[in-house]
Length: 95
Picture 1: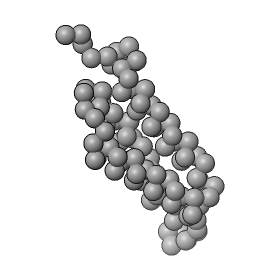
Picture 2 (picture 1 turned 180 degrees about the vertical axis):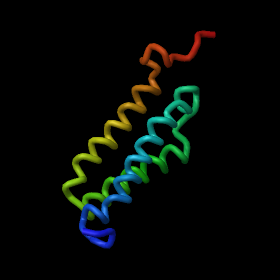
Picture 3 (picture 1 turned 30 degrees about the vertical axis):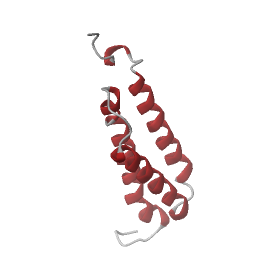
């Protein structure tokens, strides 16, 4: 099993890293919307790209799909939770 071994796990690795990176970007960029921003083209494109990356894992390696579907869903839910400002230390200061 050298670096040229082409298995479904090997082919899916770049897509798993892409899905994790986009999920992280969704969570980190939720601060923009919390500070008064709206769902712009970048946010929608980020979510669409997350969907494409996770969906491609279904075709490449079906065993990875449920895991990264849950990771993507959790990232969207966490971003929404952070946007709402319900986290004690993350609320914007009262003016």
